[in-house]
Image 1 (tube, one colour):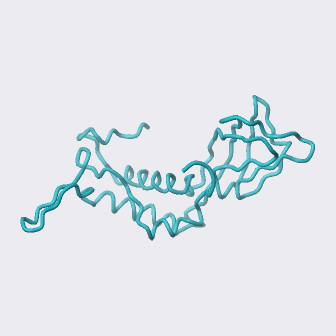
Image 2 (cartoon, rainbow, N blue to C red):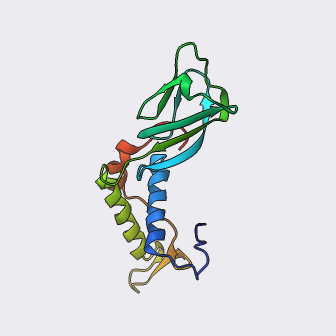
Image 3 (cartoon, rainbow, N blue to C red):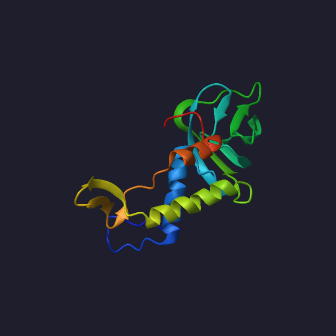
Length: 176
């Protein structure tokens, strides 16, 4: 299902839509989805050497690691923290953007990270009920104007305290 166009005023912005928006905000901040457990195929950049870091902090299953159409899964050791290390004598990662395609299962269940699951719900509810970003305000006339797109807030911002709570789940390398 394609994401709704929030610029279209007829789009029904359901609670489920806002939960997905909250998950996207957490993914953007953390560098990966965190929860729930997902099976995904990721194309990642490699920079040579024997170690490759995945954009994940909790890998539960590695299904394939494709380089140039060849599965390198038997050439490496991997950790739950998302590190792939080639075994000695098994070569080096290529030095090229998007050179490695990894199919994996990663993330935490809601039971394992209830604070993240609750935060997704909290952010989703807040975004659904907030009027929008203040674009102008007057004091004596007590008027306020909000920036919206089709009646929807322009973003799903994370509060500072929420960012602090998510810091242990954040991928601490790569582009931001």
